Length: 377
Image 1 (tube, rainbow, N blue to C red):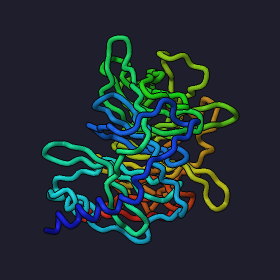
Image 2: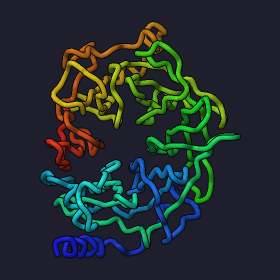
Image 3: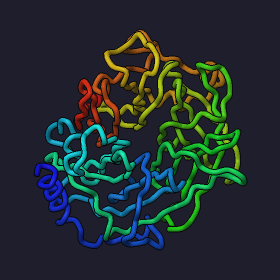
């Protein structure tokens, strides 16, 4: 009875937002309405005006959905939603052990949180939303405009995974891997996003500071678009954990892009999420949320995060990059100057920025996941 009642509440909660949604002509061209099927999910993020970007590795594509979720109120989670997996599982009539939350994204236009969910044993996927009151609802795309863009693998290869997707104001970027020697990929999609089109693709080579060698197979796990002095970059983090930037202006599709490693956060870590923000003093920071997969001397949780001064990304001198990149002090909360631990991210499994003071995190509390607000320093 509990699962049936919850399913009814979830469906009813969405009924007020099921009206047709107007498409912004500046964002989607030749949109489709209805009939959207998602067979896999790896990453979610938002563009302007409630535009949801969905990475679907199973079809090697990015799906853009005009959600119509633009407020008018802009309010994020009032209090934590404890044991969020049980809430979602109850609505689907399964056990919480059968639920995996693959990613989260918070809509900056409304504060509503979107969760990418996978259900076992059939591996079906869906997206659910959580409003400021903590009410969970299924995301119904039946009347929403959308477009699907294919990510090309190469002349004789295919995309094997999509690790992240983001919007920079003029383009959509995605990162992933292909099944060939230069496996790491960066994709760009022009805006307006045209249904049925394909993306530009670049091979990415990166200097891994901890390994002291150039690598072509390690994927960019998470990234943010970054502009400086009129030039556009993808700033990404890799396993072990170099933070590198790739210049993507004026490059022909199919070319190889060589990344410049700016910071090394420590061997034995895998990045999960990246975002940037500006603190109260006006200083810009890049936040790298990551997971330890081997012994590390610092911190109470294998899930942690650090913030890096954006000044490191602007370094141009060769003696500040690649093998000479700044290395985080792994035994202290700060150091060198401009690199420091973000305490509020300890225990976070997923993270996404809401504004310059708060992030939304999915936190592991001794095996139980809760959806919470984390205050940024």
